[in-house]
Length: 289
Image 1: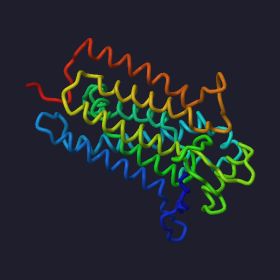
Image 2: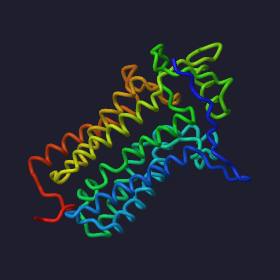
Image 3: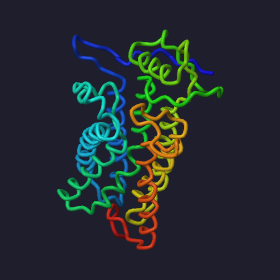
Image 4: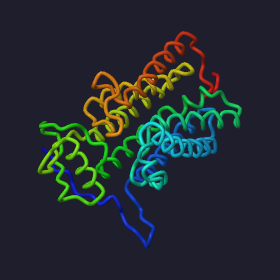
């Protein structure tokens, strides 16, 4: 098995200001999305201008941050906030919900589309292939923080997590898991579900969407494919990811909150792709030939 490296979640600090890996990963994700969007806008047939991409990524970034945090508070962290209201602003400790962030981005897309006179479906389709590498970066941030671990395993690709050799933040998370699983002495052997998610929900999702959208597709199809693929990947990985302690399994002793939130994505994605190919409407993101 692989020893989990002792990584300080703080890259460097100057007085009270601390630069953390988790925050840096979000910055990397937004920069990559902006760069990829600009590449697509530079295509000869694109109806997008570079300034449009700049504004879209700004709107989407606000939606991700606000939606992700509010979604976590609603779906997962309500009890923690009631116990310690300061938790609301402690984003550097994690506590971001992808599904909440997705809702925030959809609201940002609505606002952007209305301001620019574009179809909401076209804006969502343009955005669909851009966040995958950012999701990968965010999951690497979870891994560095030592959070969102998977279930115990003896597989050779599992990680050995010894809290005595870790920095305080990941050590505290490991100790909580040991207490939850009744492991004494506390030496965890677990799936790195953060990296599984980064691989499937991030890198693989990006490759699928980037290749798929490299050719003209019917309106709504890219957005539908994003929802379908992410929902399937997240639903599958939840089987090896430890559910939040304050939620646990919500149904049948195996269904988690993440799976419940992913089911509508799968259904909506499949329905959107079906409608897209039946209508076969030309995307507004490309100039008419």
